[in-house]
Length: 297
Ligand SMILES: C[S@@+](CC[C@H](N)C(=O)[O-])C[C@H]1O[C@@H](n2cnc3c(N)ncnc32)[C@H](O)[C@@H]1O
Image (cartoon, rainbow, N blue to C red; front, side, top):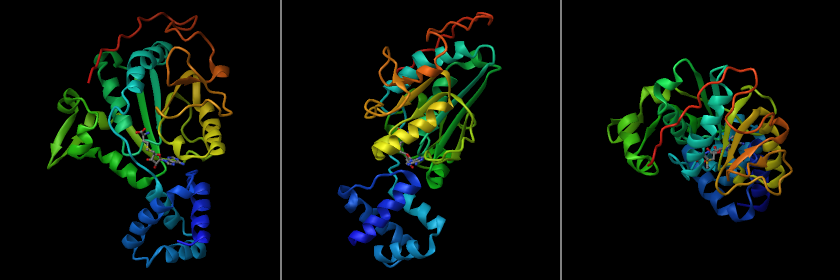
């Protein structure tokens, strides 16, 4: 690939998705876009770039973004954020929302859905205690192709073996040929929609919990700051923001701050209206704090 073609692709990816194509990823671009060329009957990378330059075809641009995104994910990835969700965030939000009996969770950059389904399975553990609650779990991603896989909820043996506790497999999956499908009950708890984290418009409203994990690592610093700036106002007061294990807000100009008691959990101080204890707001009828049953994988 020529320098000029690489620079063109770099700019295209940066503008369309925020993905930062550094010089050391050149080989990755050549191999992934080579596959795209073969699939689409395009002679080579030079021809691909020529077509992109001439047509500005949004479908082809999306295909390039799709080809360059890394969709690596697994059930209960890194475990700690899910323990945090089960033991801290969920009890806290259930107490805070006892009056409205609604809970909204957003997995921004959800890839093939394992993150959202992991949260749904944890919520399902609460059983009848959530009767009458409106629970929404939204999973979004820039890649429509990966969202199709997420919606189907069908995973290979390899994907199942990575992180899913056996009791969860037995309880929530059915075998379909040599693959496994998430049960209809768990699938019905999650909705998947396309969304680009760089988009300024806010089609989804505010959330109690935002998981935005393992996507900022692919962005340069100004893009990380922009994405955090766009996501922060989408949290409710006292809402919880969770990043990936290799990600942090330290050194980034953002209003989010680390929760000193829980590593990996972030909040927006300006939106923190009350102490973070699970006590109901004044005026609300006190309700018992929901005990989230232990789940050890
Ligand atoms: C490595 S996966 C992370 C999946 C999951 N959150 C996890 O931690 O396991 C990163 C995902 O970010 C998505 N992505 C990349 N750029 C994006 C953007 N600008 N807006 C939305 N999603 C994006 C990719 O398509 C990919 O599915």
